[in-house]
Image (cartoon, rainbow, N blue to C red; front, side, top):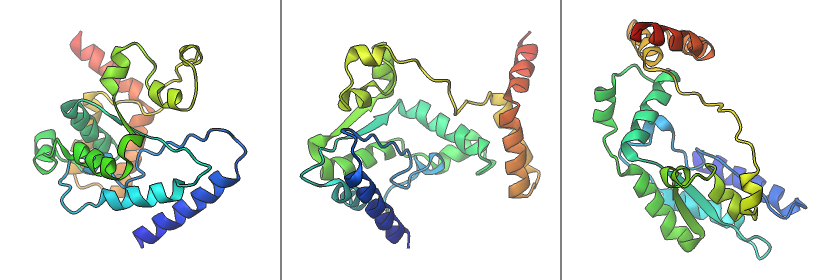
Length: 212
């Protein structure tokens, strides 16, 4: 059923793209391949990303479409730590970091995904290291915007939007995790986690007072 839903979604996507009058269409989907932060560094032995890439490319293939694919990657250790925090703040689990890393120890799992995509997409796939783009002083996402035809001047003139996915301070992450260990119902824990995220400024204050 999962594959059937994916094929149907791609069929609808293709229909929408084919009828658009815009010269360029930009699609961004972090979880298009079915990977989520809480499983990104888990073993990839049973995953078939080549099949998903073929379905995606087939939906985009047309004499009228010139498709390019861009994947962003980052420092694996920092990425794994971020994935851990993301999954805790969504109340997906209440493991401490070492315990979580023990079952998410595959630091090359993202590279396996990229390799699978490369087999299907070839040189139409661009892999960008976030640190390289940021280190150059460019706006994160510049490679994508450049592929869409924007000039360097146009990209430089863009205003950086405020972050929507705000990182939680460590004391807030720890609170969510400890509450999860107390046996709260998943729905209740999710509500508490959402409340903490909405009031994250309080935890910044606590952290500052503690350091003072």
